[in-house]
Length: 417
Ligand SMILES: Cc1cc2nc3c(=O)[nH]c(=O)nc-3n(C[C@H](O)[C@H](O)[C@H](O)COP(=O)(O)OP(=O)(O)OC[C@H]3O[C@@H](n4cnc5c(N)ncnc54)[C@H](O)[C@@H]3O)c2cc1C
Image (cartoon, rainbow, N blue to C red; front, side, top):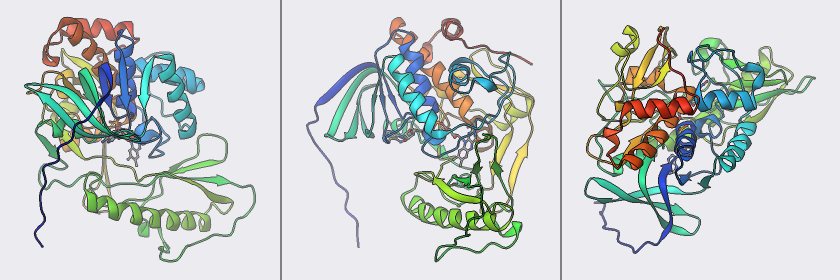
């Protein structure tokens, strides 16, 4: 059967105007919203789900991987929510396990304090462009399709949804075959204090050996001292931005979760019951925009430094095998800079892309994708959007000395090691 293609035309009312419109409320989006609001801008943060925090809450990631720079908004979050982990200096590493439920609540309150207007259940549908600029984004809301107008837009959807719709070129996954890192459904088990009856629902797998497990390893954290075991052990070969692959991943990953819980109950965690499963299977990697600069593996391993630095990290190269192998490529690095240009699409004057879908190769994104780095990139994007408005310049022409000055005012410190 031939599938048709349609032109879809509607008159859509503008629901709201903001100086800076941020699409996607994950680590990058929440920080971008704060970064712009603190620079005096009216900010709308549009999020398709019911919660802020992105993979950190929706995907139950629940641990901040160490990046060697606890700074800016990320540092504030640690100070306010996880004070016991706050290091003295900015250039230190911490890897706190947190409650995703607390982070969800914390971010709601934080946005109120920062005067960011959050719109939940608002999913990006398309851009309205005028020449080299985006004039509005069309969102699917609980009241139907609505336009949100703005002066500057920051795409923090993780998938570069806004940028791609606006015509920004992009790549997906490994350079040689387009395969992305696999998806994982995170879950928690809780120590009940007494033996539980292991339960394996119909259709699930009975893993006998560690080598039978989806990642061929046991990977969990028990840092919260409250009986919570955070489990990152499922693995599904799928691209989280493809309809059929997500359909497969959402059912396969859930089967794996029940199977892993059963395995753990039989192998040392006999007192633990399955207490929470993330509402969606986590997505590590989908699309990377092409921007003024592409971060590469070479930059990571040589410790590249850039005059337009907006984030610094020493998080390892961390690639869960994209081709269904039970391996993970983990390689320590000393630290590198991420330049502002990785967030700037060439052809659009008023758009930045922050978070895991910045311009980076498959290997480079495996290191920059973790939450603390995405908070840093988001904060810089928000501050840059405000400066570009004040200066009436395109995003690509934001003066770096002003951006660095603004970030310093917002508590960001950079180091060269
Ligand atoms: C299984 C797994 C384990 C991980 N483990 C760790 C870890 O231990 N520590 C760590 O620090 N990092 C970890 N990461 C990586 C980290 O969580 C992500 O890379 C990070 O959250 C990316 O931030 P982001 O803001 O770019 O995107 P996301 O966190 O993906 O947030 C994107 C946001 O945009 C919203 N959105 C998407 N599309 C639309 C749309 N069309 N309209 C409106 N809103 C939209 C989403 O709902 C979401 O809220 C892990 C990731 C996964 C998947």
